[in-house]
Image (tube, rainbow, N blue to C red; front, top):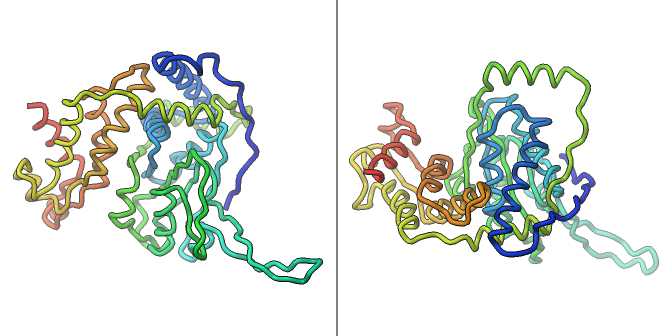
Amino acid sequence: MHMDSPIEVPPPLASAAGSDTERVASLATAKRSILDQLGKRIVGQQDAIELLLVALFAKGHGLLVGVPGLAKTSLVTSLAQTLSLRSNRIQFTPDLMPSDITGTDVLEQDARTGERHFRFLRGPIFTNILLADEINRTPPKTQAALLQAMEEHRVTASGTTHVIEAPYLVFATQNPIEQEGTYPLPEAQLDRFMLQIDMSYPAHADELEIVRRTTAPEAAALQGILSRDEILEFQELVRRVPVASHVIEHAVGLARASRPSDETASSEVKSFVAFGAGPRASQALILAAKARAVLNGRYAAEIEDVRALSVPILRHRLVMSFRAEAEGIRPTQIIDQLLQKQRS
């Protein structure tokens, strides 16, 4: 279990103040600097980095799925360094207890009076970016310890509620090829993740560069690009980004069309989907679209932003039917079909 490391706060951005359009330009500039810094340590994985930034500024959580050795852990810890945020890492194991995550009450005795009292000792969940490594290796009871923190940014222990300082994001990793000793995440917890970020094997040229870097002397430490206050400001900026009614209609239409019981559901959805995406998916599509627009220097979310994010937002929210499993139908195939239908 890795606890908080010291952070170096960068100087404020010159254009952090001013109008919202100036702030949009400022964030787009900061994004390029963040990508430059991450490029010193992470080779390739540009799509994953973009989605992590979308989740960050949309105040969402991310689930990173990929085989071992794809730098999932390194990517999250490196991102925290470039954002000057506190980060903790929890290695999830079958014997991990909920109190190992949230914290526990410890009995203390006053040296002068001899009186005893309980003091809450905060767990590693109290940080800005929590890396839940191999989250599917721990039982559901321990997984559930994250639910309140992910949704409400607070922890209740022994009847007392403790607030987690903003910004707060959970980035969990999961290895898809492991079967023994794993506990699939329940649908309720999967729905708490705004994005599922699938990471694939690197390209040949990228793998050559990875080997060169990791077998050479360590590179210099990463520089912080944004301060905590700037991140909070940009998160609020994303909320203020305007969205036209037809963009919202498109996002809601995608989510509703994934539900077998909805009148807009296609025959494929009715045959292969047991449960579709809920209203939280519609909200995520719009918030993530806003963040994507701002990160690309635009002060308005468009339909293409929604469509570009539909797969990472919807794929972990579709519960496939037994027929789909028998015929090898994947959630991404259903989402592609939904996108084609919405465009027509």
